[in-house]
Length: 182
Image (cartoon, rainbow, N blue to C red; front, side, top):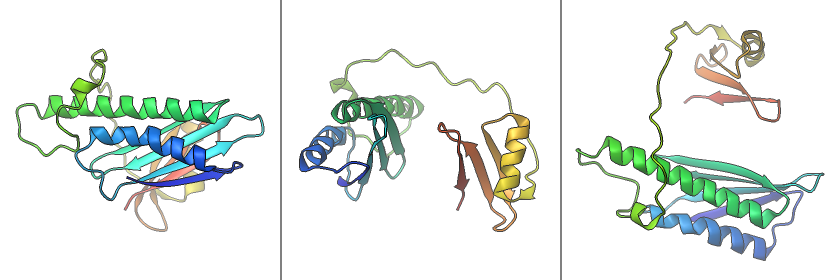
């Protein structure tokens, strides 16, 4: 894996860089190949001295992403690594269950779950409602207004300029984000 580590309001020291690469590098054992994979690590420190780490690992069939806040940056790195490991195990369990009887190419290395401690079986996702609606062409500001009127935290719409499906959403910090499809 290649690492792209950057800091906001913090100098990324060699020790911090090495620690992050060492901890996140342990996740490589879960994959058959990590060739060409770039790990994006963003380290931040806020005015209240809270440290935040965001890690994104785009894989061919899977995108892993986790973030964590803590008073200590090294502890935040440990916590985010644990969170990513849980995501990997959960995803691998689902993939194996789905393809148990079929031959399929997996992203994961063989026998990697046996080296990890067993976790309780996750419950299946239950789809309780399906909605169908026409996507109205609008701009992102109108979509945010619609989302807020409905009291939702996301809204799907057709972008009037690009004629593509877009999604606006409310972020944890109260601001808004936009997802554009290809």
